[in-house]
Image 1: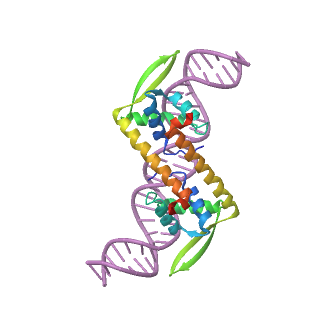
Image 2: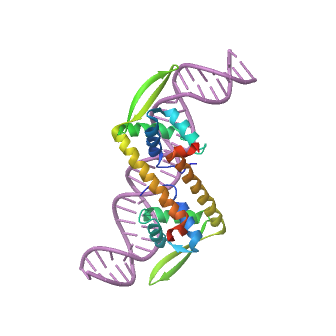
Image 3: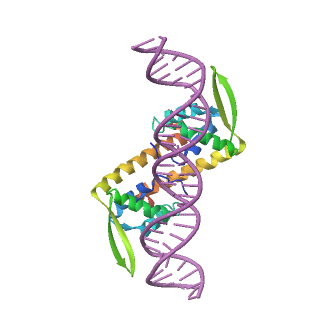
Length: 109
Length: 109
DNA sequence: TTCATATACCTAAACTGCTTAGGTATATAA
DNA sequence: TTATATACCTAAGCAGTTTAGGTATATGAA
């Protein structure tokens, strides 16, 4: 499923609003699990997104070595939390709007 | 609202599955109306999309002169109708999947 | 009359956000 | 030793938008 164009930032922000801190690889696994294997975030999309969100001040990073491997844990900043709420609301509104188009009969209720 | 990236073809196909034939300008007005002014299809997106769908064999065109102005009426071909059903189902599935991410608690019901 | 707005079509360049396709490195099971 | 999983990264290509133009007719307002 590749329809999530434009929503990757929102997905990441929303996940982090529920999980305190997560690392990149963990995010891809979690999204895959929650979406029942339907949304597979490619690494070429994920890592640039994380760096973008960090450079905008929405995420902060902490690098830890676990089992002799690096993990970069990301967590929301205060602004990131606000952004998460805003983006989530926008996505909900978008979904409601798309449902109007998919179920036009409901417009006449 | 600019989140509809990648869904324009689906919106057009779905509309045409309900309206027999429509012309470009009419489509933008209809989508604006149905979406309560939230989805504004730019002409730079619309016309290439219509030409794309036509070149793929999903639409056929009939040009009419109405009130001294040209209108290009588009309607679904047989394949276009199949594509409309497929794409609509995909969009519905996408929406349901996004709702899983937005409301993760519901996953545990 | 002329100016803005609406109707109706179109396209090219720029931009964005993905995918594809590479790369490094460690751990583990077959 | 080979494949798979874990864990990070980036550059080039591509698709589908936006932006910003273009043509032309009709209509209502100043």
